[in-house]
Length: 322
Image 1 (tube, helix red, strand yellow):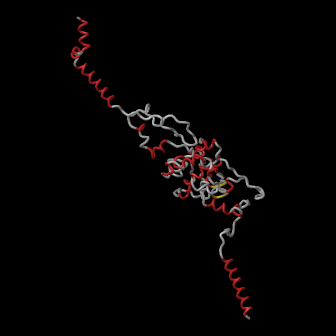
Image 2 (cartoon, one colour; image 1 turned 120 degrees about the vertical axis):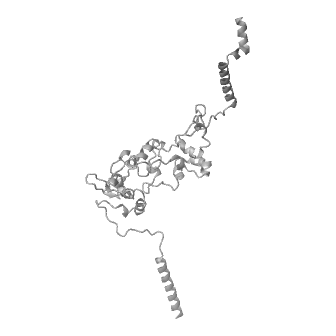
Image 3 (cartoon, one colour; image 1 turned 90 degrees about the horizontal axis):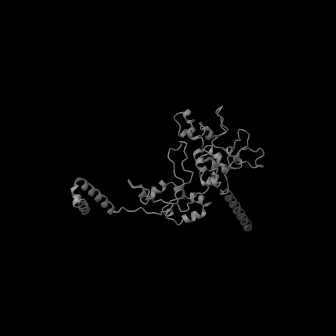
Protein backbone atom coordinates (compact mmCIF):
# COMPACT_ATOMS: atom_id res chain seq x y z
CA UNK A 1 0.00 0.00 0.00
CA UNK A 2 2.77 2.38 0.93
CA UNK A 3 4.58 1.55 -2.30
CA UNK A 4 1.45 2.33 -4.34
CA UNK A 5 0.96 5.69 -2.56
CA UNK A 6 4.60 6.58 -3.15
CA UNK A 7 4.33 5.89 -6.90
CA UNK A 8 1.07 7.83 -7.07
CA UNK A 9 2.71 10.82 -5.36
CA UNK A 10 5.60 10.82 -7.86
CA UNK A 11 3.21 10.52 -10.82
CA UNK A 12 1.09 13.46 -9.70
CA UNK A 13 4.18 15.55 -8.98
CA UNK A 14 5.57 14.97 -12.48
CA UNK A 15 2.17 15.70 -14.06
CA UNK A 16 1.81 18.95 -12.10
CA UNK A 17 5.33 20.03 -13.07
CA UNK A 18 4.63 19.44 -16.78
CA UNK A 19 1.37 21.40 -16.58
CA UNK A 20 3.12 24.38 -14.96
CA UNK A 21 5.98 24.35 -17.50
CA UNK A 22 3.60 24.28 -20.45
CA UNK A 23 1.55 27.11 -18.96
CA UNK A 24 4.53 29.48 -18.69
CA UNK A 25 5.00 31.95 -21.61
CA UNK A 26 8.29 31.68 -23.46
CA UNK A 27 10.32 34.62 -24.73
CA UNK A 28 10.76 32.88 -28.07
CA UNK A 29 7.07 33.01 -28.82
CA UNK A 30 6.09 35.48 -31.57
CA UNK A 31 2.63 36.98 -31.72
CA UNK A 32 1.22 36.26 -35.14
CA UNK A 33 -1.81 37.99 -36.62
CA UNK A 34 -4.97 35.92 -36.39
CA UNK A 35 -6.21 36.75 -39.85
CA UNK A 36 -3.85 38.26 -42.41
CA UNK A 37 -5.72 39.47 -45.50
CA UNK A 38 -4.32 38.72 -48.88
CA UNK A 39 -3.08 41.56 -51.06
CA UNK A 40 -5.96 42.98 -53.07
CA UNK A 41 -3.96 42.54 -56.29
CA UNK A 42 -3.25 38.91 -55.53
CA UNK A 43 0.41 39.56 -54.71
CA UNK A 44 1.99 37.66 -51.82
CA UNK A 45 1.40 39.38 -48.50
CA UNK A 46 4.78 40.34 -47.05
CA UNK A 47 3.52 40.02 -43.47
CA UNK A 48 3.13 36.25 -43.76
CA UNK A 49 6.92 35.79 -43.68
CA UNK A 50 8.26 39.20 -42.60
CA UNK A 51 6.11 40.01 -39.59
CA UNK A 52 8.91 41.61 -37.54
CA UNK A 53 9.98 43.72 -40.50
CA UNK A 54 6.37 44.74 -41.02
CA UNK A 55 6.15 45.97 -37.43
CA UNK A 56 9.30 48.07 -37.94
CA UNK A 57 7.85 49.57 -41.11
CA UNK A 58 4.41 50.15 -39.58
CA UNK A 59 5.85 52.50 -36.93
CA UNK A 60 8.15 54.33 -39.35
CA UNK A 61 7.49 57.55 -41.26
CA UNK A 62 6.97 55.44 -44.39
CA UNK A 63 4.36 53.37 -42.59
CA UNK A 64 2.55 56.57 -41.57
CA UNK A 65 2.57 58.12 -45.02
CA UNK A 66 -1.11 59.02 -44.88
CA UNK A 67 -0.81 61.14 -41.74
CA UNK A 68 -0.87 64.41 -43.70
CA UNK A 69 -4.47 65.22 -42.59
CA UNK A 70 -2.99 65.95 -39.17
CA UNK A 71 -1.39 69.03 -40.74
CA UNK A 72 -3.92 69.71 -43.50
CA UNK A 73 -7.27 69.40 -41.76
CA UNK A 74 -8.74 72.67 -42.97
CA UNK A 75 -9.52 71.71 -46.57
CA UNK A 76 -9.43 68.31 -48.28
CA UNK A 77 -8.45 69.85 -51.62
CA UNK A 78 -5.73 71.89 -49.96
CA UNK A 79 -4.43 68.71 -48.33
CA UNK A 80 -3.58 67.42 -51.80
CA UNK A 81 -1.30 70.35 -52.50
CA UNK A 82 2.30 69.23 -52.28
CA UNK A 83 5.75 70.65 -52.79
CA UNK A 84 5.56 71.69 -56.46
CA UNK A 85 7.84 74.66 -55.82
CA UNK A 86 10.52 72.21 -54.71
CA UNK A 87 10.39 70.36 -58.02
CA UNK A 88 8.23 67.49 -56.80
CA UNK A 89 4.77 66.19 -57.55
CA UNK A 90 1.93 68.64 -56.99
CA UNK A 91 -0.24 65.90 -55.50
CA UNK A 92 0.98 64.69 -52.13
CA UNK A 93 -0.51 61.25 -52.88
CA UNK A 94 2.42 60.52 -55.19
CA UNK A 95 4.71 60.48 -52.16
CA UNK A 96 2.29 59.50 -49.41
CA UNK A 97 0.87 56.39 -51.10
CA UNK A 98 2.18 53.59 -53.30
CA UNK A 99 1.08 53.24 -56.93
CA UNK A 100 -0.91 56.46 -57.11
CA UNK A 101 -2.91 57.04 -60.33
CA UNK A 102 -3.66 60.73 -60.83
CA UNK A 103 -6.21 60.02 -63.59
CA UNK A 104 -8.77 58.32 -61.37
CA UNK A 105 -7.28 59.44 -58.02
CA UNK A 106 -6.65 55.90 -56.79
CA UNK A 107 -3.65 54.11 -55.32
CA UNK A 108 -2.54 50.53 -54.81
CA UNK A 109 -1.42 50.72 -51.18
CA UNK A 110 -1.71 53.17 -48.33
CA UNK A 111 1.55 54.71 -47.16
CA UNK A 112 4.98 53.93 -48.63
CA UNK A 113 4.48 50.19 -49.02
CA UNK A 114 6.92 47.35 -49.69
CA UNK A 115 6.30 47.57 -53.43
CA UNK A 116 7.64 51.13 -53.52
CA UNK A 117 11.17 49.68 -53.21
CA UNK A 118 10.61 45.99 -54.06
CA UNK A 119 9.20 45.99 -57.56
CA UNK A 120 8.27 44.31 -59.85
CA UNK A 121 6.75 41.62 -57.66
CA UNK A 122 8.21 38.20 -58.44
CA UNK A 123 5.54 35.60 -59.19
CA UNK A 124 7.58 32.77 -57.68
CA UNK A 125 8.59 34.64 -54.55
CA UNK A 126 9.93 33.49 -52.07
CA UNK A 127 11.66 30.95 -54.32
CA UNK A 128 12.99 33.94 -56.27
CA UNK A 129 14.25 36.89 -54.17
CA UNK A 130 12.38 40.16 -54.49
CA UNK A 131 14.25 42.90 -56.38
CA UNK A 132 15.40 45.82 -54.24
CA UNK A 133 16.00 49.35 -55.49
CA UNK A 134 18.77 50.74 -53.29
CA UNK A 135 19.49 53.89 -55.31
CA UNK A 136 19.44 57.37 -53.84
CA UNK A 137 17.43 58.49 -56.86
CA UNK A 138 14.46 56.44 -55.64
CA UNK A 139 14.50 58.26 -52.29
CA UNK A 140 15.11 61.56 -54.09
CA UNK A 141 11.78 61.30 -55.87
CA UNK A 142 10.14 62.47 -52.64
CA UNK A 143 13.03 63.65 -50.47
CA UNK A 144 13.96 66.24 -53.07
CA UNK A 145 16.08 68.75 -51.20
CA UNK A 146 17.95 66.13 -49.20
CA UNK A 147 18.73 64.34 -52.48
CA UNK A 148 20.07 67.51 -54.13
CA UNK A 149 22.25 68.22 -51.10
CA UNK A 150 23.51 64.64 -51.02
CA UNK A 151 24.51 64.91 -54.69
CA UNK A 152 26.85 67.78 -53.76
CA UNK A 153 28.39 65.89 -50.85
CA UNK A 154 31.45 63.71 -50.51
CA UNK A 155 29.12 60.86 -49.55
CA UNK A 156 27.75 60.89 -53.09
CA UNK A 157 31.26 60.92 -54.56
CA UNK A 158 32.15 57.94 -52.37
CA UNK A 159 28.95 56.14 -53.50
CA UNK A 160 27.49 56.17 -50.00
CA UNK A 161 23.74 55.77 -50.52
CA UNK A 162 20.83 56.71 -48.26
CA UNK A 163 20.34 53.16 -46.97
CA UNK A 164 23.99 52.94 -45.92
CA UNK A 165 23.09 55.28 -43.05
CA UNK A 166 19.31 54.84 -42.81
CA UNK A 167 17.41 51.61 -42.27
CA UNK A 168 15.05 51.12 -45.20
CA UNK A 169 12.38 49.71 -42.90
CA UNK A 170 12.50 51.91 -39.79
CA UNK A 171 13.87 54.97 -41.70
CA UNK A 172 15.98 55.68 -38.59
CA UNK A 173 19.76 55.55 -38.46
CA UNK A 174 21.11 52.02 -38.66
CA UNK A 175 22.71 52.43 -35.24
CA UNK A 176 21.33 53.96 -32.06
CA UNK A 177 23.72 56.91 -32.04
CA UNK A 178 24.85 59.06 -34.96
CA UNK A 179 28.49 58.64 -34.00
CA UNK A 180 28.15 54.85 -34.28
CA UNK A 181 26.81 55.25 -37.80
CA UNK A 182 29.63 57.61 -38.76
CA UNK A 183 32.23 55.26 -37.29
CA UNK A 184 31.38 52.59 -39.86
CA UNK A 185 33.41 54.62 -42.39
CA UNK A 186 35.16 57.34 -40.36
CA UNK A 187 36.62 55.18 -37.61
CA UNK A 188 39.94 57.05 -37.30
CA UNK A 189 38.16 60.42 -37.06
CA UNK A 190 35.77 59.07 -34.46
CA UNK A 191 38.68 57.72 -32.39
CA UNK A 192 40.29 61.18 -32.46
CA UNK A 193 36.95 62.75 -31.59
CA UNK A 194 36.73 60.66 -28.41
CA UNK A 195 39.73 62.60 -27.07
CA UNK A 196 38.39 66.04 -28.01
CA UNK A 197 36.77 68.78 -26.00
CA UNK A 198 33.72 68.51 -28.22
CA UNK A 199 32.83 65.06 -26.93
CA UNK A 200 33.49 66.19 -23.36
CA UNK A 201 30.93 68.95 -23.94
CA UNK A 202 28.43 66.42 -25.29
CA UNK A 203 28.76 67.48 -28.94
CA UNK A 204 28.19 64.78 -31.58
CA UNK A 205 29.03 64.48 -35.27
CA UNK A 206 25.45 65.37 -36.19
CA UNK A 207 25.53 68.61 -34.18
CA UNK A 208 28.07 70.09 -36.61
CA UNK A 209 27.70 68.09 -39.82
CA UNK A 210 23.89 67.93 -39.97
CA UNK A 211 22.87 71.54 -39.54
CA UNK A 212 19.10 72.03 -39.12
CA UNK A 213 17.63 73.96 -42.04
CA UNK A 214 15.22 76.84 -41.75
CA UNK A 215 11.54 76.51 -42.50
CA UNK A 216 8.66 74.61 -40.92
CA UNK A 217 8.28 70.87 -41.27
CA UNK A 218 6.07 70.16 -44.26
CA UNK A 219 7.33 73.13 -46.29
CA UNK A 220 9.18 70.85 -48.69
CA UNK A 221 12.58 71.40 -47.09
CA UNK A 222 14.73 68.70 -45.61
CA UNK A 223 14.97 68.99 -41.84
CA UNK A 224 18.74 68.47 -41.87
CA UNK A 225 21.46 69.59 -44.27
CA UNK A 226 22.68 66.53 -46.18
CA UNK A 227 25.78 68.18 -47.65
CA UNK A 228 27.42 67.30 -44.30
CA UNK A 229 29.57 70.44 -44.58
CA UNK A 230 30.25 72.48 -41.46
CA UNK A 231 29.18 76.11 -41.86
CA UNK A 232 30.94 78.99 -40.12
CA UNK A 233 27.79 79.93 -38.20
CA UNK A 234 27.85 76.44 -36.70
CA UNK A 235 31.20 77.24 -35.10
CA UNK A 236 30.22 80.75 -34.01
CA UNK A 237 27.17 79.36 -32.22
CA UNK A 238 29.60 78.18 -29.51
CA UNK A 239 32.88 79.95 -30.32
CA UNK A 240 31.70 83.51 -31.01
CA UNK A 241 34.18 85.04 -28.56
CA UNK A 242 37.15 83.29 -30.16
CA UNK A 243 36.12 84.29 -33.69
CA UNK A 244 34.90 87.84 -33.00
CA UNK A 245 38.00 89.66 -34.29
CA UNK A 246 37.08 89.67 -37.98
CA UNK A 247 33.46 90.57 -37.14
CA UNK A 248 34.18 93.86 -35.34
CA UNK A 249 32.49 96.87 -36.92
CA UNK A 250 34.89 99.16 -38.78
CA UNK A 251 37.76 96.69 -38.70
CA UNK A 252 39.07 95.65 -42.09
CA UNK A 253 39.44 91.92 -42.60
CA UNK A 254 42.19 92.30 -45.21
CA UNK A 255 44.98 91.99 -42.66
CA UNK A 256 43.01 90.37 -39.87
CA UNK A 257 42.02 86.91 -41.01
CA UNK A 258 41.42 84.79 -37.95
CA UNK A 259 40.44 82.01 -40.37
CA UNK A 260 43.34 82.02 -42.76
CA UNK A 261 44.83 79.64 -45.27
CA UNK A 262 43.65 76.02 -44.99
CA UNK A 263 46.22 73.47 -43.96
CA UNK A 264 45.37 70.47 -46.17
CA UNK A 265 41.64 70.54 -45.33
CA UNK A 266 39.71 67.29 -45.50
CA UNK A 267 36.41 67.98 -47.34
CA UNK A 268 34.84 64.93 -45.67
CA UNK A 269 35.53 66.49 -42.28
CA UNK A 270 34.66 70.14 -42.67
CA UNK A 271 34.31 73.03 -45.08
CA UNK A 272 36.11 75.24 -42.56
CA UNK A 273 38.85 72.84 -41.47
CA UNK A 274 41.40 75.62 -41.03
CA UNK A 275 44.20 76.66 -38.77
CA UNK A 276 44.84 80.15 -37.41
CA UNK A 277 48.07 81.30 -39.09
CA UNK A 278 47.84 85.05 -38.36
CA UNK A 279 46.70 86.93 -35.26
CA UNK A 280 45.03 90.35 -35.71
CA UNK A 281 47.42 93.19 -34.95
CA UNK A 282 46.54 95.28 -31.93
CA UNK A 283 46.08 99.03 -32.49
CA UNK A 284 49.19 101.18 -31.62
CA UNK A 285 48.22 104.36 -29.69
CA UNK A 286 51.27 106.21 -31.10
CA UNK A 287 49.77 105.85 -34.57
CA UNK A 288 46.73 107.89 -33.57
CA UNK A 289 48.85 110.54 -31.78
CA UNK A 290 51.09 111.02 -34.82
CA UNK A 291 48.12 111.20 -37.17
CA UNK A 292 46.28 113.89 -35.19
CA UNK A 293 49.55 115.76 -34.57
CA UNK A 294 50.18 116.13 -38.30
CA UNK A 295 46.63 117.37 -38.83
CA UNK A 296 47.07 119.99 -36.07
CA UNK A 297 50.38 121.15 -37.55
CA UNK A 298 48.88 121.55 -41.01
CA UNK A 299 45.93 123.55 -39.71
CA UNK A 300 48.29 125.85 -37.76
CA UNK A 301 50.43 126.57 -40.84
CA UNK A 302 47.36 127.41 -42.90
CA UNK A 303 45.86 129.64 -40.18
CA UNK A 304 49.11 131.39 -39.20
CA UNK A 305 51.49 131.49 -42.24
CA UNK A 306 53.72 134.08 -40.49
CA UNK A 307 54.80 131.41 -38.07
CA UNK A 308 56.51 129.57 -40.91
CA UNK A 309 59.07 132.39 -41.20
CA UNK A 310 60.11 131.85 -37.61
CA UNK A 311 60.85 128.18 -38.25
CA UNK A 312 64.43 127.17 -39.11
CA UNK A 313 63.66 126.35 -42.72
CA UNK A 314 61.70 129.62 -43.04
CA UNK A 315 64.75 131.70 -41.98
CA UNK A 316 66.98 129.93 -44.50
CA UNK A 317 64.58 130.89 -47.28
CA UNK A 318 64.64 134.60 -46.25
CA UNK A 319 68.47 134.63 -46.22
CA UNK A 320 68.56 133.16 -49.71
CA UNK A 321 66.18 135.85 -50.99
CA UNK A 322 68.42 138.64 -49.62
